[in-house]
Amino acid sequence: MDSPAPPLIVGFVADLMFATRISGVAERLGYAVRWIEDAADLPGAAGPTDEGPGELLEGQSGALFERLTSWQPALLIFDLDNAKIPWQRWIAALKSSPATRRLPILAYGSHVDTEALAAARSAGADGVVARSRFSAALPDLIAEYARHRDSAGLLEACRQPPPTLVVEGISLFNAGHYYKCHDLLEEAWRAEEGPVRDLYRAILQVGIAYFQIERGNYRGAVKMLLRVRQWLAPLPAVCQGVNVAQLRDDVSRVYDALTALGPGELGEFDRSLFRAIRFASPN
Image (cartoon, rainbow, N blue to C red):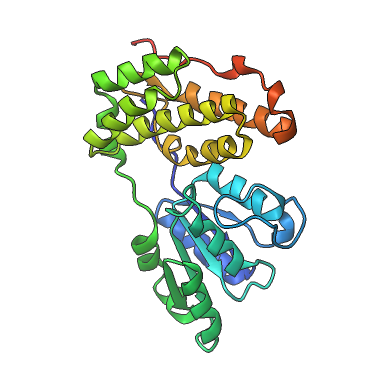
C-alpha cells in the first residue's frame, strides 16, 4: 500500500527572506512548500466577483479555489504586508466554504499595523501573529497550526475489509442509484470514528455530485466535486479494497468535462463518465 505524499504548506509571501526561511523550516519538518506570491499569477479577471460566500467558481478567486482544493495543503501562510494578494477577501472566502474552511490559516504582519492584524482575525484566520514572533517561533507555529493526519491509523484501517453498509452503498452507487446510496453511506460514516470514515463520506459526496448533474444543477455539482477532494486526497490508492486511485481519476474526468461544458450545455454531459466504483484485485 502506498504512503501519503509529504504534507504541503502554501505561502502567500513575496518577501524573499521570509520565503527562504519558511521553506527551510518547513522542509526540515517534513513539509513541501508552494508559493502564490502575486494574485496576478492566477488566471482570471482581477478583483472580486459577484459571488457570495462559499465556493468561488469564477475569475481569480475561482482559480485560487480550484488550486487549493486540488492541492489540499496542511497550512496556508499569509503575509499581511504582501500588497499583491487580496488576503482579507481571500481568507474570508476560504473560511466560508465547506471545501476549504478546514484548511488552517496562519497570518503574520507588522506589530504596529494593528488594523491589518485585526482584519485578518475578523476574516477568519486561525492564527495571527506579529512578524517578529513569526520569525522567532516558526517551527512551533507550524507544529501548532498545520493539519496533522493520522497516516498510520488510516493505513491500518484501509487494510480492513469494508463494512456491509459500505458494500451495499457502493452496490447502489454502481447501479446508478446515487441518491439512494446516500443513507447507507451516511450511516456507515456516522458509525465510524476513525480516519477511514473519509472514504465513506467521499463516495457519498461523489454520488450527490452525480445526482446533481442528473438533475441539471450545474453549480451544485461543481461545488460538490470541489468539496469531495478534501476527503479523497489523503486516502491511499486502495482503501478497504476500494480502488481510490481510480475513483479520484473518475472524479477529475467528470469535473473537467462538466466545467468544459459550462452551465448552459449541461444537457450535453456524457453520462458514460459516471463509472462504477471498483474493488482492487487482491495481490
